[in-house]
Every structure is written in C-alpha cells, then in structure tokens.
Length: 114
Length: 113
Image (cartoon, rainbow over all chains, first blue to last red; front, side, top):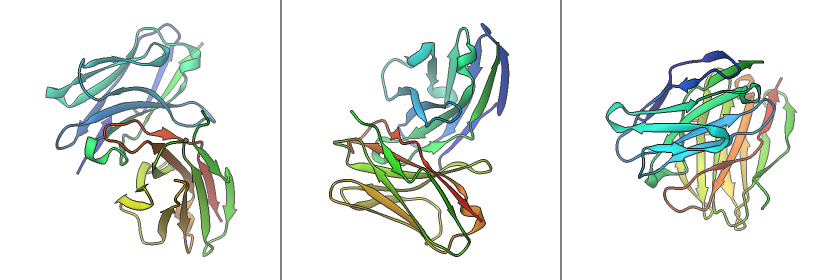
C-alpha cells in the first residue's frame, strides 16, 4: 500500500531563514508528486508538482522541490521564508492510473516568526 | 474560471442523523474525488467519481456513499452519523485524463454532536 511520510510535524523559523521540509513516499510504480499548502482558514492550494522530466521543480511563491528517485524523496525548499508562509504543508502522491486517488502525508505546520 | 465549490460550508448534525454534501467541480472537469480531513487521521481518500461512475473507493464504512450527476456535480452522503465523522470534507476535481492535478474546494466542515 502506498504511504507518504513527512518527517517534521511542526517547524518554527524566523523570517529570512531557509526552509526544507522532508517527504518520503512508498509507492509501487511511476508516481506523480505534489506539495500543497493550506493557509489558516483557506483551502488546499497547489504549490508545485512533479510528473516527469527535470527532477528539480519550481512552484509558486519561491518554493521548489527535488525528486530523488533513489531515495523515494520529494523535499520542499525555500531559500528565505516570510511571515506569510505560515501555513500547513502537505506532500501527496498518486499515479497516472489513479490520479484521482492521492495519498497525503500528515502535514507539517510551519510557523514563521516575524 | 470559477474554482471548486462546496455546499454547505458548515453543518451541525446529531448522532444518528444523515447528511448530504455537495460539490461542483471546475467547468470541464469530469473527475471528482472526496477526502476527509481530521486532526488525528489527516487527509484520507473517500472515493472518486468519473462520468457518473465510482472509480475508486477508500477504506471507509458503507455509511459513506456518493454519486455523480451528468453535469459532473457530485454529492456524498453519510448515514447514521457518529461523533467520529466530525471532520472537514474536501472535494477535488480534475479533467479526468491521466497525470493531472487535483484542485481542491474550500471544504464542508461537519460537526456531529
């Protein structure tokens, strides 16, 4: 069965600090990988996605993620966080044949101190 | 383009009652998936509908059911509500081709008393 593991449940950073959120997955076959963000009181929004090609993908708001197939990882990074990045971040995986059925990690709550 | 809409946004029910939640996908999207989000279990897949047919089902009891109409709008129903059904129910839509992104609605927050 597929699973997604996010290593950090709660991360606290100061503004301008660098961010890296870990995500590992267990999935048989070719995967599609996603990072979603949920700001307080708002709905899930797509940050970035990886389907194929360049393993380094860039998303909105300066976020990027690197797919490392050998490590089954898809870590999210941002060089310099802002207070407005305070939110919950979810890593998710699905496959081309089951693109409507995503498996999500437990989420990481990021708090950025001004 | 309008996003995924869900109604109602908030709902309070008592144990034993049933509830129906509605989801309107993005125009042109034929696939609708439902997820349950709780603090303890996170985001869990309920089911997916495509062209009025259930394509996938998660590990939820038979009290949870759904359907999709010819205009792609979807409803999910929970019968005989339990306290543990209190959650945010999210709907996501996509066109229905392989390898696509799901777009999420704001959710319906259900509280069971």
